[in-house]
Amino acid sequence: MHVDYGAMISASVDFLAGKGCRRIGLISAPPGAYAGTLGGDAAVVFKEGLRRHRLKVNPGWIIQHSEPRLPGSGWQAFRDLWSASIERPDGLLVLDDVLYRDAVCAILEMGIDVPGELQIVTHSNRGEDFFHPFPVTLLQLDPEEMADRAARTIRSHIEQIPPPDPNIPFRLLPAPNVYFKRQRSVRELRS
Image 1 (cartoon, rainbow, N blue to C red):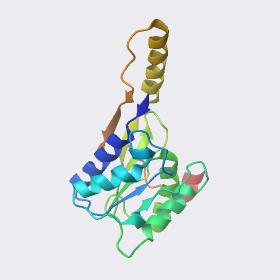
Image 2 (cartoon, rainbow, N blue to C red):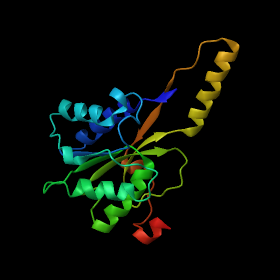
Image 3 (cartoon, rainbow, N blue to C red):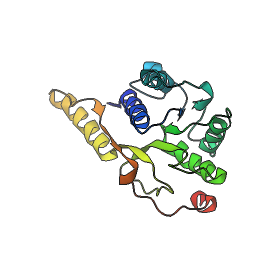
Image 4 (spheres, rainbow, N blue to C red):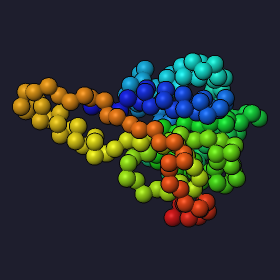
């Protein structure tokens, strides 16, 4: 079983390009972390998506050195991306919910208008309790569906029946459908 990150990345780039974004960035875990992509490298599929839409590939807007488990890595990744050149991205895909939470702090600190200046698509688990301080589009996975698929896969091996589809589905929930609260301060987000 796996999440088809290649399909998630392609759907995200298509969505952002369809919303008029012409300068799209990516924040993700290091290469090797994403099933469904060439060598687990999210940047390969991301660049293909940009080229498919005839969009510029700016290497400074592709941040993959971020380790989600390190506190503040998403904050640093966003600051690196935002300061990579004079021209700034108008769209952003964040493939990790932990990196996204840190990036939110940097976005708020820098006073960036989301979605006016920057439209964001980010990974999210269904049922999470994080309230977004601005409208974002979610790539939502259902942990219960993942657990159900795992149980059905084990059962199929025991009972020698065909296993379920190994791909875990995701849903793209556009920004107007995502609940967000008033803009929180950085202090509130870090507590």
